[in-house]
Image 1 (tube, rainbow, N blue to C red):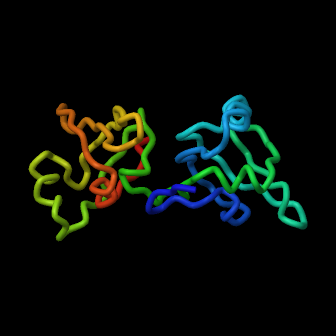
Image 2 (tube, rainbow, N blue to C red):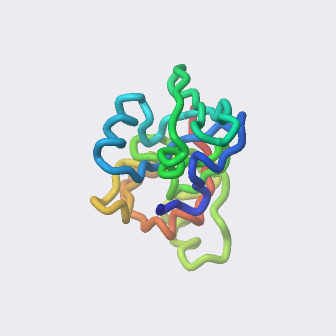
Length: 158
């Protein structure tokens, strides 16, 4: 399973954890079923509990409680709420920069483009394979590679 720097498999979260879906890594049939249940990229969810042997997992999604097999949960990448880098932010969402990591090759260029602490970034799209991603900052739109976006810590705007 491919994950970003802060993402983990849903089944790894302890009970009571709140997280946001980053990506689904299933075949077409299971992905379709998860989409029907409202489990999509950017969806907020809460781990409610696990059966005594760890299977199934009980999750609250969009106000509904659902049970899913451990095999399904381990193929859903999530980020715990409050822990984000730009590369994990879903397309269509707006985030606020909390930190640009210093001393990286791209830091000075990001600052020149207006990616500074407190600035608002809208994730406008991604290439077909997910890299690079396109973002809008201070009215300008540009592409950034995901490994460069890992150096920008953000929080979702409410």
